Amino acid sequence: MSTISVIEPATEEVMAEVSEAGAEDVDAAVSRAKAAFPAWRAMGPADRSKLLHALADALTDKHEELSVLEARNAGKPIANARGEIGMVAECFRYYAGGVERLTGKTIPVAGGVDMTFREPMGVIGMITPWNFPLVIASWKVAPALAAANTIVLKPAALTPLTAIELEKIALDAGLPEGVLNVVPGPGSVCGQRLVEHPDVAKIAFTGSTEVGAGIARGAAGTIKRVTLELGGKSANVVFADADIEQAARSAPFAVFDNSGQDCCARSRIMVERPALDDFLAALKETVEAMKVGDPLDETTVMGPLISAGHRETVASFVPDDAPVAIRGSAPGGRGYWFPPTVLSPVSNDDRAAREEIFGPVAAVIPFEGEDEAVRLANDTIYGLSGSIWTRDGAKALRMARAIDTGVLSINSNSSVRVSTPFGGFKQSGMGRELGPDAMEHYTEVKNVYYATEGS
Ligand code: TAP
Figure 1 (cartoon, rainbow, N blue to C red):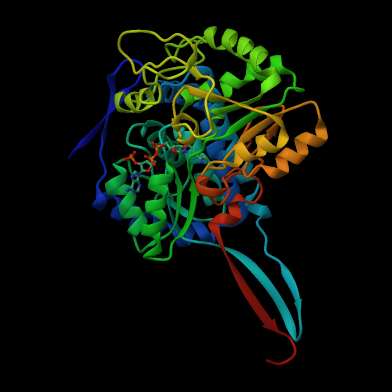
Figure 2: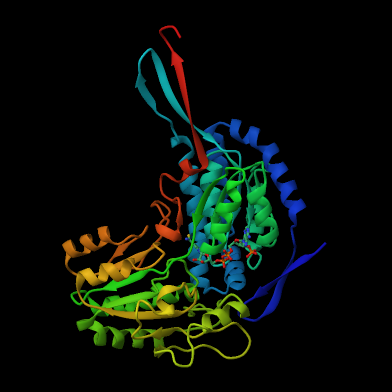
């Protein structure tokens, strides 16, 4: 049997060996999920809700253990990992509370009663990335289970450890066998098999736009439902009338959190010209003070990149003639380190402003006035997140309406809450996760007409 050697990016050492699933393991997992579906679907909503609450409790009990595992495997600061694992438990609790609120409608019609039901789809295939391994899995698993589906989850081969733990924790918490199945293996084998499998009703995918496009094509063969959470190249728009100090102190974390390996990274920092010098001065101070190093050190704010190959890709965005305005520190020696780097000034036509770098490299793009801000912010194939900084409330709302993006913050760089919808415009994806409506994306609407006055 082949195994996956799971690498710790901060040390380049193997931290675990995991059995590698192949296409036949995916088939077996789909069969288990299919067999478990009728009983899971028939379970009363209150009982299903109780099991999801039990799972949330169990995740809370294992919070520190899972946080350390995630921090080591994904190379993220322990404080961030704790926040993510906290959100995983919160997500299960939120959708546990939603089980009994998933309702249909009654619709006035002639001659009878018409009603709709939200029916579970059956077996859902899930494919997740390595940057936020367990938390992104939970955004899919929790609402899909709450809506009475069963699941086959393929985590990224680079970071499978917490998903494997989730399957065990779910079983220990009382979830029936076969309801949640984890298959760690390569995307080109296990992911592809899930996408093609005739017994899988839907694929919920998070990852790159390129792989997402292939998944949409593959799913077409069996008319599978698909939700796609893909890449981003979001704008952080700072007007000269904003609190420049606050915007500049916050901006680095909006790009360099998770070493820039964040689909929501506001990696195009657009600054109105009159504020540019003050902004860059405060940005420099903040970036140079960032502690990059051991993910398990409580004071670390940025860890390594995920792999040597990925570091090479990121480095290709900073050639020798790149306009490097600010460069933070990074440890030497073993580990896939890369310093937080700010390029300035950058044109929105430059490669660093057009492609998702997925690393700690930010591009500062000067602009003049509201119209140019809208034009530049929208001049991208992506539309996932973004921010607007200004003290003018009306301008903030005009901008918020004009920018084509799924998630936007005003005078803040926050993106994600369990209770609010998350997802992208344009090539950043299709569908929404989280928030009150996410369970509906794991259901089909059934319409039933009951004739009360003859047929
Ligand atoms: P990808 O390379 O796209 O991989 C994502 C997942 O797809 C992995 O599990 C991968 O498996 C699998 N996969 C690869 N090829 C496949 C195929 N042919 N068929 C089916 N599955 C396949 O992305 P990544 O590098 O892990 O993650 C980074 C990307 O994800 C970035 O573009 C980022 O913006 C995006 N992202 C988006 C969001 C949201 S919410 N919009 C959140 C996080 C990340 P293996 O890697 O195991 O081979």
